[in-house]
Length: 126
Image (cartoon, rainbow, N blue to C red; front, top):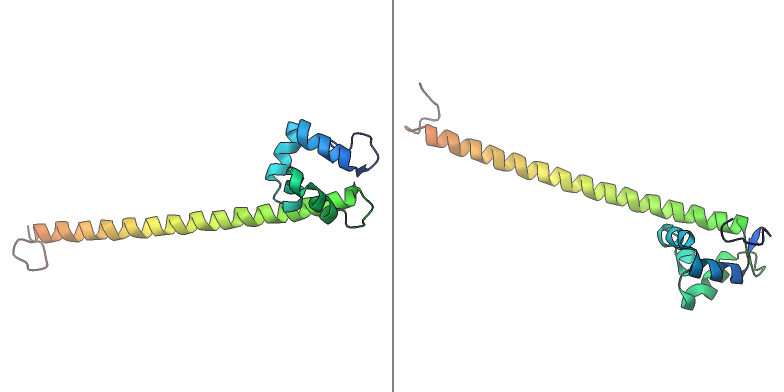
C-alpha cells in the first residue's frame, strides 16, 4: 500500500495505481501473486476500472488502507486455500504411490516364493 501511495494521503488514487502497475516491478510481482482477483485485475488496463469499483467499497473514488487490507485478507485466504488444496493433492498422490509400490513389492515377493516352492507345497524346505 505504502509503495503505491506516493503522496502519503492514506488512500490510493487511480493515477497512483496506474503508475505503480506500469513502473514498479515489486508492486507488479506482489499483485500477480496475491490471490485476490480484484487486486490482480489492477494489472489489466481493461479490468482496472471495474477492479477499482469493487475495491472502493465506500465509493470515495479512491482505495483507502482499510479497503486495501480487506482485499489483502481475501487474497491471503484464497492463497492459503490454494496451498491447502495443493498439499492435499500431493498427499493423495503420495498415498497412491505408496499403495502401488506396496502392491508391486508384495506381488514380486509372492512370485519369488512360487519360484522357490519347486514342489508347489506352499512351504519352503531346506
